[in-house]
Image (tube, rainbow, N blue to C red; front, side, top):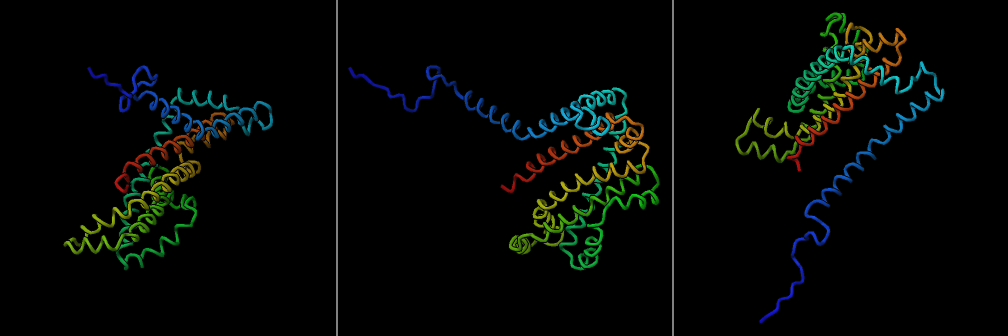
Length: 280
């Protein structure tokens, strides 16, 4: 009779080892993700605590810096009254419409300037002229053209956000790999086919960086225009509450705009990472 001795090598760990399959690594990943999340956003928690302490200890005037708990209470009241939601929907419509037009027109314009020397010679100086100009200076112009309604705000956001998208698309398209262009043309591709199959994918990373810049700029231009000339929107609500001394509610709206902008940026980055996964 032959007695076989097992060394246990190659045998998956069982209950005797105290390590159920897959559970411990998953737990470690969960703890690591939570730790990274807390570490990443801990400055926001510290800022909130410092804000509350500075106001409660009267290190700052309650008018200039109301307690964060009072701001949260005012935020709930604005939600319940419907003022925040109604004005917020108007603002998001204006920002979304202006930004969408800027992405479409600016992206196409940047790629066209990159592949056409006459277009670059004609439009390049205009882009260089208007890019450093403060876009809020166009508020009176857009109001003069389109009045006090949504159109003037959408036009302002469109004009301000189009330029970073155009520059991003232009830089990306100009950086197209010449070997890919030569290969596409050698296989019979011409005109729009080369642009769509080679130039546009090459321009996409820089274009998306320009869109991220335009996303932040859209919120700045939106609130600026609504503060000056609007009867509805986040900017109008901020100005109205500040003028009436409702500083807790005013800060609540300001923090709401900041949070929406932050959330939009996070979502956009996640979408971009998924969209550019093919580059890996």
